[in-house]
Length: 140
Image (cartoon, rainbow, N blue to C red; front, side, top):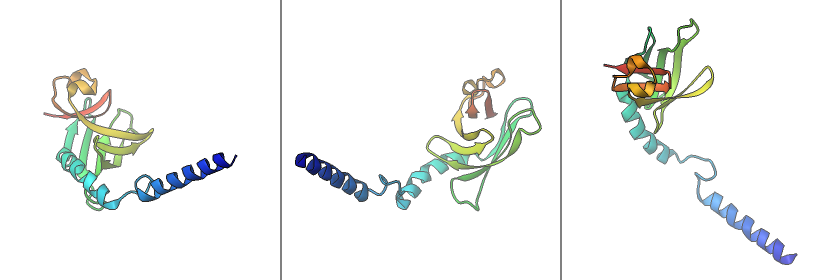
């Protein structure tokens, strides 16, 4: 019984020290590392600023959200044919692309080509942004 209590105490002490010594392990982000990690992401996604064309009148316009800071964007889009399938959404650069929330929850806008859009009308395009198969926007 004493050995079990000693082993448990040692385990708790070790796990407590490990969490305390590493701020990111405890869930508290390191502000310096966060800034450095976002820097390359927004440099890539800054190149996406402008108008992208989908099919049947669908479009995506990306602009920088200067009030929110580097790596933040406003996504003005018409993403469906129904009247309620358009709007402006706030996005943030990540390693994978631009994350934003729309209707059904979190979405990711990522770079791809016409084939990645899954739409035959965009198949030959090479410079595209894709939300999901069946929703993509391209530049000529």
